[in-house]
Amino acid sequence: QDFDPAPIVEIMRANAGPGTHRPSGAKGQCYAAEFVPSAAARDLSKAVIFTRNTPALVRFSVGGGNPNVADGSRGGNRGLSIRIDGDGPGQTEFVMVNAPVNFAKTPAQMLAFLESRRPGANGQPDQDKIRAFNEANPETLAQGRYLASQPIPGSWVGVNYWALHAYTLTNATGARQVVRFRWEPLDGRVDLTDDEARAKPRDFLAAEIAGRLAANRPTGLRMMAIIGRPGDPTNDVTRRWDDEDTRRAVELGVLHVRAATDAARCDSQIFAPTILADGIDGPAEDPMFAVRTPAYAISITKRQN
Ligand code: HEM
Image (cartoon, rainbow, N blue to C red; front, side):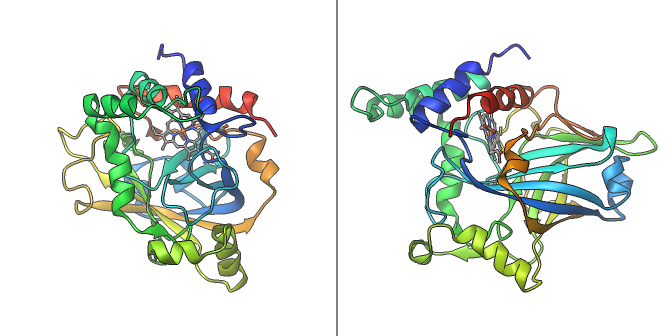
């Protein structure tokens, strides 16, 4: 991977404004969690995280660079970062959003997307520039269109998250299967209308999880492997697979959120999507995949406040 992610981090920080901590997913809450595998997972992957219950660290977030954004806001995504601490070569990390597509398919396109939205001297982006970029890059609008079509999440564990990239699972006999990961609410979706969302307190998402934990209600997300077929695109995170929502998916396990924990546990490290257990491989041919860990490694050194 030759693309230098530093200019992408720089423009993300410029667009987020002065004093930015994380330029994306700035508002969030860290939790201790546990991953409990299903028996069926072992048919697909030999990864150690599918052989026994494993502690995990989770950070849920609200998209964008504003740490004080209202949880009920319509703009932006909701994020889920997970580190499953399998011993040694079992450690597995995902950094996901509540949309089945990303807004850019290559780092160069991501850079150009963000540049088109850079604020000018008046503090505002140039609408003509944005329009011209959008017309030339229609696939970059798919994520926003998807999010606009959906209700606002009423719970961090009440919405689907996608890891977006195509992964390859390898089982103990060496059989390989291409999959995409979708994490689904164990206890059903929690949807808000725009009016309901507006009536919520600014920080209701952390309070909603606290309420579930206090009442012993489910806080789980099911890890689903959507089974790939020959011809599925594996190099373009702006594209979905045909009939992806209805085709066969295998439950690999459940992530249970157990307790809120200090922000420092999540802030002192990065979640690195390229760290995967033996038995789970990322896509070599997807130019967005390899650039992510280096981008996060740069970002943690630039965070302020
Ligand atoms: C392709 C799919 C991608 C998804 C689903 C995604 C999702 C996310 C999420 C959920 C966060 C918040 C992380 C947290 O909770 O700690 C985040 C942060 C961030 N993302 Fe991405 N991202 C993607 C690609 C990229 C790429 C290609 C770049 C840059 C080359 C990038 C740059 C960043 C940066 C700089 C942060 C802030 C990191 C920090 O300070 O910890 N992302 N992303």
